Image (tube, rainbow, N blue to C red; front, side, top):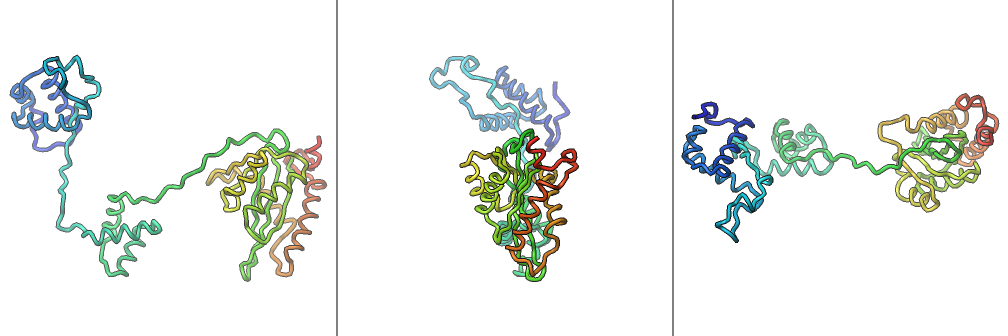
Length: 322
């Protein structure tokens, strides 16, 4: 019987690909003739012959036993590896009279690869160079050339432990104390132990990984407890050198997740308290030595005298030695 449902000029449905595969099964496995398969599927003999050529071209395994040509193929060939369905080739034209020339496409790719700017900015820069191109053409070129914005590669992170003991999990952050007139900054490294809420702060004139690591060691000596893991954000002062110095002292490190502000909730709340009760607004008459003396007095008050609601009306010192 002739199958009338496949007598169309062009159709890209998946059922047609399966029908071609079924025709090849009958031709190869059942050893029907090309004329029989053509009558069964309502196609010309030449069409079935072309299907067979495409089917042979898409195989990645050996289709014949050259060493024993008289041996049946079914006994020596793994039919599970055969790709039966023959995909339909795209009907899109290879060229178009209004297609962008190679120079325009190259200019779009060149500007895109510099900073991965959006299509609107690329179109604006092209117009400044004297190249007239539509916004849709720029977007289409970016899509065809697969010049998508590079995704950020997230580093592997240590599992966050529960703060069930002093030093089990410590957080560190940096407060930027900015002069509103000349935009100069004093950097204050802050450290807090999540179990006892013991805190430490140190002022510095530079933002450096070395100073951040030194602050951790000074905080560890000040609190008198060994640190097991230090968590920080993804700032530049908490990268490879910072991690290497801490790992050399058997202190694990981890980074907080991007766009998860609750990961650093304790240290951010301490920074807010530090700004409100200690350093306040920027004062041009306060140099870094004055800020350091003020921080030392506040840290002693915060750890030994200030009562915290989060630890059941205790001070951090009492929580540490309970």
